[in-house]
Length: 429
Figure: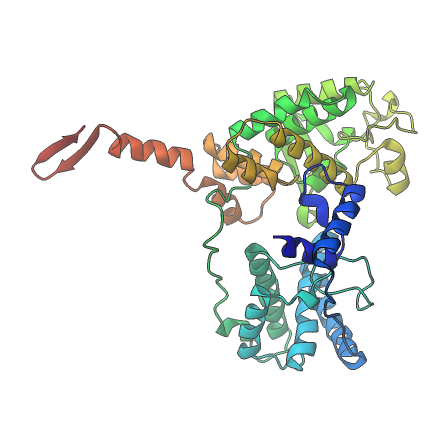
């Protein structure tokens, strides 16, 4: 255990984020104690020679063409580029082959590499790509991360095939289905359970007034509407509209696609209360007022009745800062602190606590989808609400829920088990 902690510290970055009540000061003191106990063995430094770096950069230009053709999302583009560039670096250093020369044997070797990434390939230090202290990985990829990497790379090679850059896709010759982790937790859902959700709501009462108002709205609105975090952070007063007497939120979502999401009455009431807690009138607030705002007082005026009834262009970066829009890292860190404090103070069973401790901001969207599926919301309604282009993505929320499975099996095979046979009915007490 202490050896794993030492390795995490050596890779740098905010390694202490998973430790409750730890910040930079406590982390520095702990690092000193670990070093005094077990020392700091020299870790092999990751490096790349000039020729290999040049080859990687040249191939990356081809990858950029694919990314540009594939997506308009900056976040998705960064994720795709990361996976392709990791493969390019590995091919250049470990296999000494180019992208177009890659074979099925290389594919198999890369799959094995992802399962056990050497420590010298890992670093969380802030350094420019290929500069000292930088390495392609921040840590050992999880099983889901490995699956994602292979999916992206396979899509890239399919594009290379259709673009005439390769005669065939070598990834079609290997098994891309990874085995499940036998040590994976039983509960692999990324939704808060009803009990954990009650704990979060109770924790809101322990927060300062302004923070409590914001967190109360966040829990209510996300549970009711299921927005992605980036969509939530961009949402403004002008995006709320009444259509045929019903309240909707205009969303410019993933893939630069527009959609509208219904705002249930509870979410609308919570929004009005949250605006009031910020000293604002929801009906007369400036169109560019963020639905979710920083705790500081905005620089720009928040009321402009003359602009509420006409289209208002979205705010630029300067106006966003002045009006108190939040960034994703700020909100994600605040939510993580909130959930950790709530779970630590709760009386939840240990297994449920462990499950909730790994929760992230994105769990709010999964909780919305899971509760909706459990309450028999039609799949086409939920798909439209979530803005998911593939119905198979939405369908995963409709897999038999554990509670429903237990109830049905208990009904048939419980204490009073009735089994019909050819000879009649047998009752087991």
